[in-house]
Image (cartoon, rainbow, N blue to C red; front, side, top):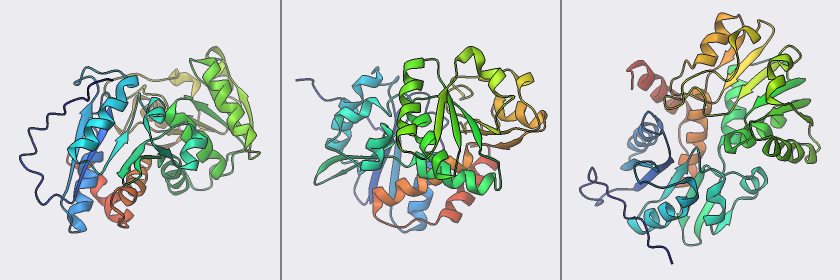
Length: 301
């Protein structure tokens, strides 16, 4: 049996008086604003909330080792964890129960520890759908291209069915993964789907209403743009799930080409709103959390 990971948290001298100890598991999570969002909302609710980053790289662990982090966090007294790239799918086999919606997506971004063990949820789907409706009102969704079929891509794909997409085109470096996601969406009966080869993505952009980007490209740890800027155009809307930086290379290029854009900030906030509720059992103030996020960005956090 594997020995549990020992989590060293020197910045927590004592857990006495802490209402909730939370964490984020993934790689490249240094710039994340999720810790501050949860801690500020906890303060506003009158509960002391501590939120810590558990970087897999720093722990010298792979995505497949996320179960060891879950075990150690539970023993340490965490109320729950958020899970991000690259462990949203590998975490599934380390959970005691999975919410039906998360199971259907095949991805978990929120784990709550309780009397029934580690329970997996997904708040990315609801977070993206709410952000899309708020940030791109009236946007055409007859035909949409999704880049990325991993954990975030799965959530976004199903979120697009929530906002009425007619046909969803899916592209991923791993074609088998793209085909699996396209089939899962098609089986819901809520949208038709097709798989687009990576080499054909730029041609596809000329035929769709919008582009949703759900890969790590553009993150602080993975700089760059997933498509050539010249393939973007003013008839297109572009939504990015990456929010650190907020103005990714893709968002910047799309805006320069005259496209409507949706950065990843709204999804980051609204998934945190739903996760906070799951972690604490307390209803958060979404508008206040949006204000917290705006303040953090303005301050250069």
